[in-house]
Image 1 (cartoon, rainbow, N blue to C red):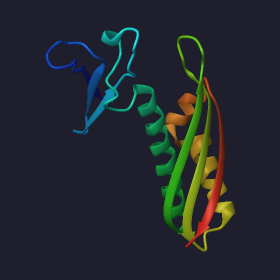
Image 2: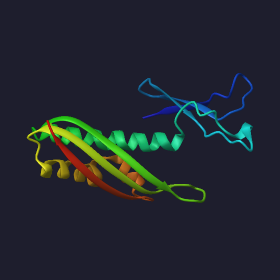
Image 3: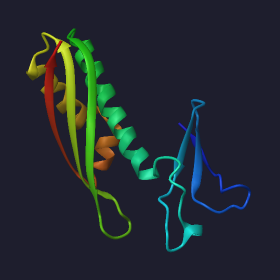
Length: 149
């Protein structure tokens, strides 16, 4: 797996904190820093997600993928899955994630709550590379709600 991240600068002035990530699979992700009123040259322009937001989003994608795949492999009629991640970060550098809560909303027809709970646990404990990595610094908790379709 590979990715190239390039600083975009701003209008040829090479100020600002915008970046483009080009992934090995041929996709592009824009990232930007938060604006800094006290030092505008050090801040971003709020044109894209922050890099750490993309880490959180990627983790959500990783675990949701697992949950859907595990339920489908169990021949469950899963029809929707979303996960809302809320997090806390350390106050000082490096400002790693210290707490992450994942709340899943899973929709399906005759979907047993035990199967959803098991799929989330399997993702959390065995399959989701991103959340397992983040668990080295963050306390990760999960919850879910089941919506019958």
